[in-house]
Image (cartoon, rainbow, N blue to C red; front, side):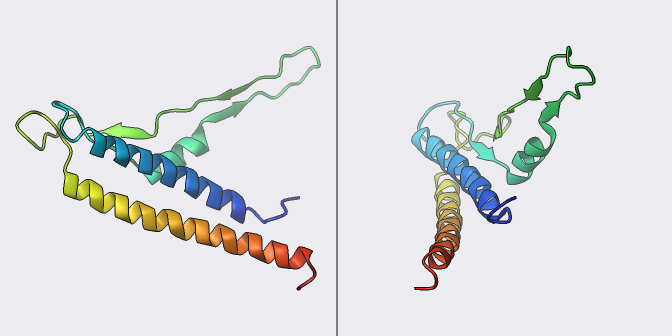
Length: 130
């Protein structure tokens, strides 16, 4: 039985994505002056596809068979290899990175607010509406 109907789990996955995206943007900003550094990005669509196709489990037909699970965790961070923004080979556009950071911060805060709302509702139910 899933107590929250999967909502909290979905919000948690969204927070994991936003956190990884924030780390990637921060890494890009930190390397804005590094020659030949290529900007990195995180794709939610790619992350979702990786989560759906990376778990394999064996079906045991006999007690003597080994039970195993394979979980492949591919990197969800991609790099713009053929893109250079400046003459030194750096591919970081500071204005674009700051815009992405602001957008990701709004997304992250919206998820946190939604989780707080869910947990406050649960708290109200536990206290009996008081």
